[in-house]
Amino acid sequence: MTDTKTLAYINMYAVLGTLENLCELDDKAKEILSGLKKPVSVCFDVKHGPSATIKFTKSGCRMEDGVRDCDIYIPLSSCEKFNGVIDGTVTPVPLKGLTKIGFLLKTFTALTDRLSEVMQPSEEALKDRAFFELSTKLTFYTISVALSQIGNQDKIGQASASYMLDGDIAFCIKDGPAATIRVKDHHLVTIKEYPKKPRAIMQFDTIDLAYDLFNGKVNSLECIGKGTVEIRGMLSMVDNMNRILDRVALYLA
Image (cartoon, rainbow, N blue to C red; front, side):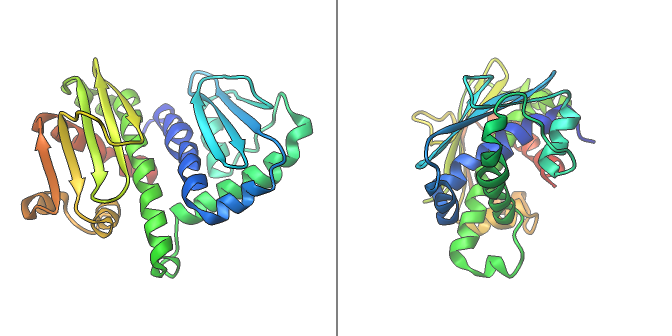
């Protein structure tokens, strides 16, 4: 079972939030942004749900939590409506910024289409090594943020978070992308960088292993036994994080 509100938080911060990494790592996304004459900010404000503002410039994009000063303001009446926007069944209607509609229809749509292409790749596309690595890195960032949203919003995830001690967990791929899962009073926050002083570490040995784990092709417990998934530090933190991680696939399927 999944929860509509939790999915909305994942769609906002984990899915749309990965646009930051797409624009940083992908040449095609950089090319899309290169035609931007001046910065444009878009705010999605979901009633009884998440709200965030994404600022786009020629050099990339950055998401900030909450309703900020923006060029385009898009209110959504429910989490269901927002989830519909993400899966393409609902057309968003800006309350502010109709003169910027060209940005939404062209630049923003091109970026989200590219994100979908990379995050839901064909088997043929994955044969290209550079594309494979890009896809896996973006999937990693999406999962790392989704993990915190599930720990905070999903009832089963909250139960696992309730047992987690305060501190930082390093969630990373060796010689690759890293994230901090910060726990404070059983509330989780993902920071897209390696923590300075982790209390626990969960590290995948290679990007290929991470891909196989993310796609259910290998068993995580077997990998831990083999040492290809390294776990160190406060093991109870990683154990409860793993319980939350098991629910990520239900929401991102």
